Image (cartoon, rainbow, N blue to C red; front, side, top):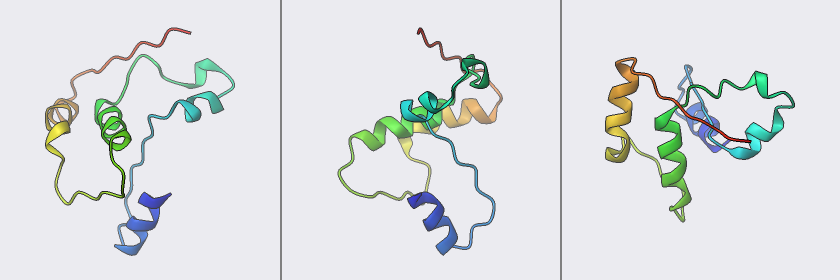
Length: 85
């Protein structure tokens, strides 16, 4: 929600929001609704970075910790995630 508020304040009209939260995943009642075979490494790495932060952080540039995943994503390289339930 903070990201949406920040985007609104900066008049950003095109947003792409992704979440890597297990609570979001649990909200789906049918496993067939979630495309488990492919994951977003950037979202996953940002979520892990966020776990270690103790205050709001905003980057004007791509965080260096996700640069290789970002490049792979832009090149269309597949990223597979397997979840065992």
